Image (tube, rainbow, N blue to C red):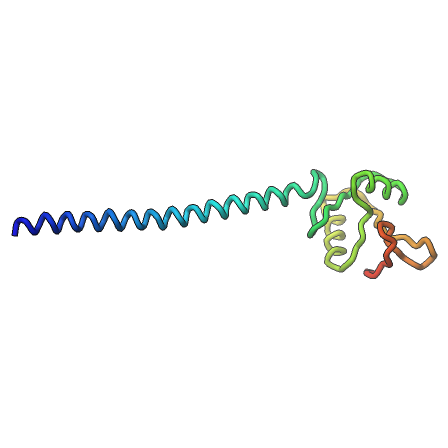
Length: 138
């Protein structure tokens, strides 16, 4: 009888160690997956936060700059081009609402703004950027 007892204790210890090892492998695998997900999310956040330059506001896939400088339409268009953009083309009510919110919020101080539409031919509104017809109206 005395011989059986130590074997049972040794057998139980081996099972416990083996069980902890298996659990450690599962935890390591789970932790590795979590770390990988964190790295991926950090990269996405970094890329997203670098999309718009400081002072610009992001909406969907575009960056908007609200200038406090008073300029003519032509001066505003030239300045936008020099900054790598163009006067805004509002294409839907969601974008229009966002712009109105930005203008009426405390984040923007100017009272009036230029948009990129013009009627070179009286009453025929087109976007200056690509000369496409203005389809959205508020």
